[in-house]
Length: 142
Ligand SMILES: [Zn+2]
Image (cartoon, protein in one colour):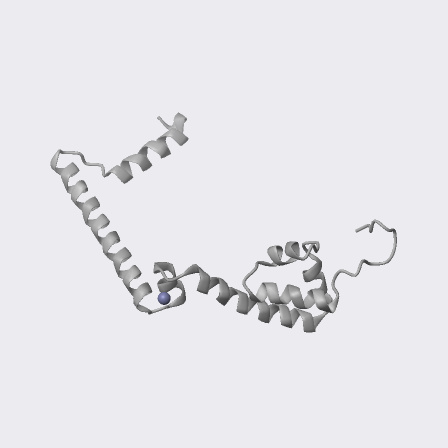
């Protein structure tokens, strides 16, 4: 790191900047976004965190708050139901809709496999493509 003015550190991470940084992170900004918004170099905050346990703890808290903030903005859907165990009506409905869609797809696939068997094709589409790709990887085998 070579400062443009030769010596002395620019007043980058003043208490005020630090507060704004933590506030941005707590509001859901990624660390990269938060530093960029304040015109800071990307790893400045992590450097400070490494030397300042108090700031590190504050940053940890801010990140936890920020994760929740991002989650709230992300809305309620199946992944929230699955990954965050949200059981609100919206997530529950999204999860059951997705479950039914998967079930319907699985049944469709099973039906089409049955059709293939009916027309006397011993290989399912999956094993057939595996067969093709593995034999093309070993051309000398034959
Ligand atoms: Zn929900």
